[in-house]
Every structure is written in structure tokens, then in C-alpha cells.
Image (cartoon, rainbow, N blue to C red):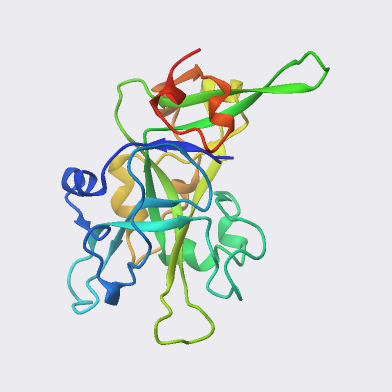
Length: 251
């Protein structure tokens, strides 16, 4: 699973880097970008937080034009379109890549609402020795690219509309990160990992008009996993209230 991660990129900077429209700072309400702006650098992103995502969509007023990359703010924890209200039911912050297309919560998103979730790296916990009271401990690790570049994880997103139909009610954009079997040395920490989406597969993954090829849902290649550094970090990350660059310092 992937339940915590770090991201330190500003939405405007990210949009400029990937040649995308930044809809976080300049939301177009006709295009359903209504989520609040994500906070600044976040070293301890947890579910229900507003996060940055990358989608590829057509202009609302020019649906025949080429789809464009767009940086959008979304709630981390997908809310299916048919949900009666937000906050009820399971918190869908992860979806298994192998079975997402079979689940009612994710099926429509797999077809036409796929996204990328940018991050500096993600956290995972490994079982450690028992403490003085005999209780098992969990040791946190941070996984990030060895070359300091950014990761983009495969995700799914959804649009949820309030059921009260009030004029001032706004739709909610929300997302989930896909996970897959861990590969290579990453299996030493956990048997699952977020699904890394390489740049050369972005077009096929984000295409809003066609289904993604089934091979994009497979675990990443061995060379991608080999380029990930694994380092033990302090238990500070265990508390969501802790949030700063010290969380990434190796033990």
C-alpha cells in the first residue's frame, strides 16, 4: 500500500516543467477544478489531504481540440460518483492495479479518468524488534529516486456531485493511487508499492478518449525499481502532525 508520501513541488513550477495548464492557481469552474489549493511543501502527505495531480483533458468549450496536460488539486481518497456523501464508507486512497477495473468504485475511472500523482518519494513501514514492553515496532523507510528526480505514480480520479443540488454546491475531485506487486530490492520493505508511470507511457496512460493498454497496469520494470533508493528514517513520520524536511533524514 501507499499511505504516506512527500511532495515539495509548487503547482506552477510543476506545470511549467511538464508544459501543462496550471488549474490549481487559476481554476476553471466550468472544467470542474474546485478543490482547494494544496499546501506548500508537504513531507508527510496523508489520505484526505488535498494533493496535486496531472490529468489530460479536452477544453470544456472546445471538446474537439487536442487534450492538454493539466495540473489539478484533488482530495486524496477517491469518492465514487454514486456515493451518497463524502466521508462514509472505506477511504479509497489506494486501488490494486490488478483488480481496479473489476471494482464498482474504480471501474469508470479505469476507463476514462486516469491521472498521475507527483511525489518526491513514499514511505513504508517494516516490522522491527519488540520494544521494552514486548510490543512489536514498525521501522519507517523512505523510497525515492537515487538521482533526485521526481516520481509520477499512476492514479485514478473521480468527480462527485453533492446530492442536494444546491446552487452553491461544488463538485469534488478526488483520486486514488494504484499499487502493484513490489519489484526487486523494494520487496525487502513491503510486498506492495505504488505503480510508477515512466514518462514514455504518459500519453497512453492519460489518454481521455481510449482505455489504457493492459500492460501499463503491470509492475514496473526491474531497472525502474533499481533506481529507487531505500533509506531508514526516524519515527517522526509516524505522526501526521510532524511535517518538515527532517522527516527525510536518514537514520
